[in-house]
Amino acid sequence: MKEEFLHYLWKYSLYDPFSLTDGDGNPIIVISPGEYNRDSGPDFFNARILIAGTEWAGNVEIHTRASHFNLHRHNLDHSFDNVILHVVAEKDTEVCNAKNQELLTSVIKYDPALYSRYIDLVNNPCSIACSEDIESAGRFFLRSWLQSLLVERMQMKSEAVMKIFRATGNDWDETFYRMLSRYFGFRVNTEPFEMLATALPFRIIRKHADNLLQIEALLFGSAGMLDEGLFKNALSDRYYLDLIREYKVLSAKYSLRPIHGWLWKFCRLRPVNFPTVRLSQLAALLSTAGGLFSRTLAAADAAQLKELFMVSASSYWDDHYVFGKSSRRTKKHTGVQASDILLINAVIPVIFVYGTSHDDLNLCDRALDFLDLIDPEKNSVIREWESAGVVPESAFHTQALLQLTENYCRKRRCLDCRIGSGIISSGKLLKNNSQLSLEP
Image 1 (tube, helix red, strand yellow):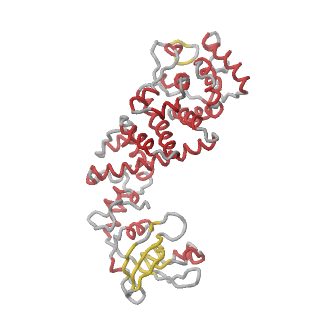
Image 2: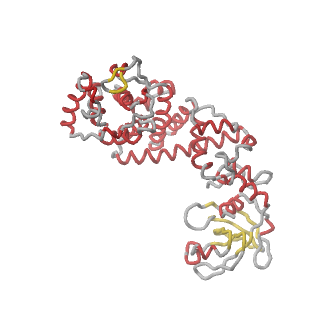
Image 3: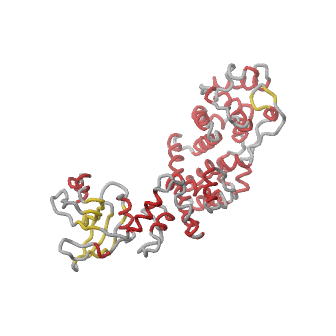
């Protein structure tokens, strides 16, 4: 028996109401179960119960065994002195609070089928435990849950954005630049791109926004890619030598120290995703006239936003993937899929956080609307949901499904999921079924 299951029963009154009695056999009538608490202290605050005509208000603590109250040292903690009811699955002892006052302890009883359904879900070996039952949730119910999950995901991403914002001295342009750089690594080169953005501040790039060659020199040089030992075939390459010349001047001017060139990964990547190509595309993006972040905030619709991030590497890369080695000629665009990844993971979260920090709800709503107009992502997680009958219509849905998978399904938090908790409580009448989950 898990304590969280008893929390679930208590919150939604999914227990036998006649099972709760005091020491004299008087029924305990629950007027309000209280507010669920996930932090330290009692499990439910501000509960209200009625015993023999007297109404009691206070906190409720729940354990699988009564003796766990002492095991968890609550009997020494004065924050539990206002507990009016100790709910347990097994009453193996009497307990007292820190004032040495005996707690009213009552055994909770419930339909065994509830626990059986719960165990079936959490022990299901499938990655999506409810895959066989999820279609019964209903389209409207599922969409409502996905909307909540998306907001939850955006809030989680907001924490990462705000951490960077504080580290940059509350500079939004610098924050946006670092977030954008991180996702130009497209997972494989995320770390070196992050290191590069830290080693090369945006304020320096901004001073040379009208000179693409200088921005490329700053990026390639600070990335350690102009180290003569890294691309030996490029030592007579004019473009490569021009970059070296520019970087020597700029690095001396700004006291720049490059990261190690060996950090960059080329193996097992399609040539179009080589970091050399991506760095040139990033340079093209950063040379945007009028300021990239301000233009991003001003974008009126998804099409206009997408257009900002559809850029091409400089002409040298039309017939190169690495320095000094020619290849078949092809224009190196970021591509729809790559630009969508940038929008979903970097651009839209920053817009959302910026709107939140400035109390601009319209901007926050616009950020979520942008997601709804981007094609759904394609990956192994989304394919599993599609196999289960949940077919996403946009990135709005795929981001929510990723949140559901990473933070609920994989952790088997079925009681915290509206779908899982709905399956467990199937056929039972709830006092509050507007938001079926343990989340407060």
